[in-house]
Image (cartoon, rainbow, N blue to C red; front, side):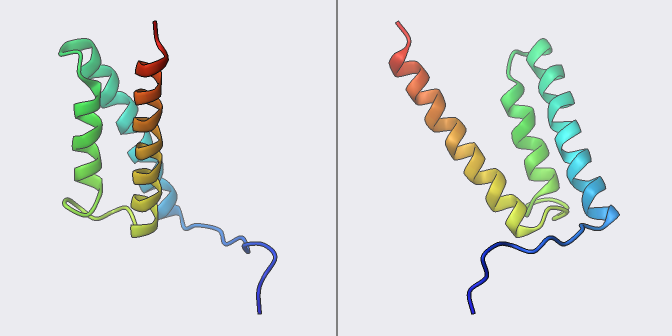
Length: 86
């Protein structure tokens, strides 16, 4: 039986706190390292390692896959921005 849409399931408070702390810390570390050593992306990689599979494994596999796919889209956009810029 094929369903027409995904059913909604409320995430637990722990899941919400982990994902919120991940996003907030990504932005904070990015801002700090971008202003200090002009390389905020490096901090984002370290936070991803700490929260993901190599580190504490707080993010589920599905969340890691989604973040990785968004990262691939970002890399594609960076390449196209470089190609299209004068």
